[in-house]
Length: 158
Image 1 (cartoon, rainbow, N blue to C red):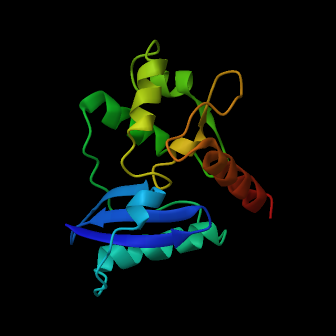
Image 2 (spheres, one colour):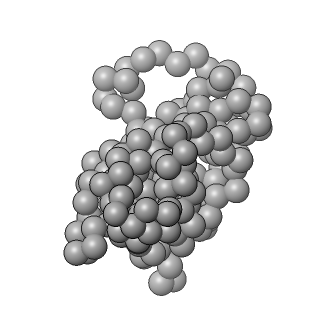
């Protein structure tokens, strides 16, 4: 498993890959950022993730093509696959994702699945909001969720 760090406008992302798949993208905490990472040559998958995230933050990419390996329980995986279908600059509610995942009464479970999303931004759990239109939660913090939604809204209108 390769681990690399990618600097973005909203913080440093820790990325876990192997030679075939992306497994994890997560925001690094300030304490985690203090770990020493040894420099090495990036694998092709790491380069692809880095390039696609750069293009996303530059407003030039609206969907990701890097191959994913989602390690999650079956219902959570169904949820994340539905979340992945939410278009750039769009949002969906926890209730809508629950219905699309096969259990319309599982809004809270959808929230839990999103909070455990191992591949943030690329699986765009920031696009999930409450049925009332409020932001709800976000593992990276509401300031990051708000930034990502504004970023997409701004770039979709260009």
